[in-house]
Length: 279
Ligand code: C2E
Ligand code: CA
Ligand code: CA
Ligand code: CA
Image (cartoon, rainbow, N blue to C red; front, side):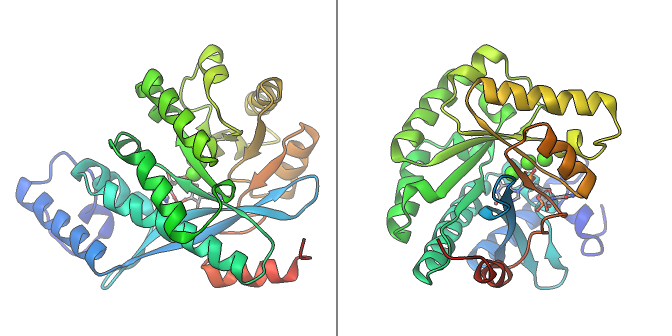
């Protein structure tokens, strides 16, 4: 059996070779984390290239593990999906993000949209729309300050059902975005049917900008596609001034990435918003 406890990466991997016994242990630990409230959200700013101001933040989950420190989502979200615990974790994320955003608004900070990542398993839950509605009403957050990020693969797994759900979510008043755009295979005709407000160009197409001619062409194509469909487009993973300039030239609406700001605790976002002019 694999040694336990040394390496978080191995401990919470989706490795096919890990024993049933070990999987149970991992599930137990994740359940304990849920019960003990060991998760925390970090927030990464998104900037409007026209105004230069932060208009939204993406909520990104971390696990404050008592022994292993702060674990990034890649180390436990895949396992949470596989073991079915993602529903509870996803609920926690959604509710915590709504509560935090409402608290910022109540404190008089400029109003932001908070973007929350939705996993496929979560989206498929029978009462998913109801859960979103209840997170909004319990927090008191107006639906237009919540955005849900759906991946192409989540949508394409069952387009018919996804479109129906997307319309129900849209009816609540929340915004929808397609995350990691370009890594899946939405057809143009499918894309046209989705009630989404924006596309998020995946980091893999951004990282080699502006030098890589293929990626430059892809980024331009996605931006023009989005605009043809009257969608806004945001690029993720922007790390350099050159990438920002390229994207601005290409007509990209918004950017997110280390160049603008890393994901940080709520208090750090607050400090940054406090420097901004109130609306
Ligand atoms: P994502 O939705 O594509 O999120 C963007 C990831 O890219 C984040 O990693 C973020 O920290 C990282 N990133 C942002 N800007 C840059 C940059 O300029 N350079 C580089 N190299 N990386 C950048 P993180 O926080 O580790 O999250 C990884 C993935 O985990 C997310 O990818 C998302 O798919 C998933 N995830 C995060 N939070 C949640 C959650 O609450 N629920 C679910 N279901 N999934 C989540
Ligand atoms: Ca995302
Ligand atoms: Ca993404
Ligand atoms: Ca990505």
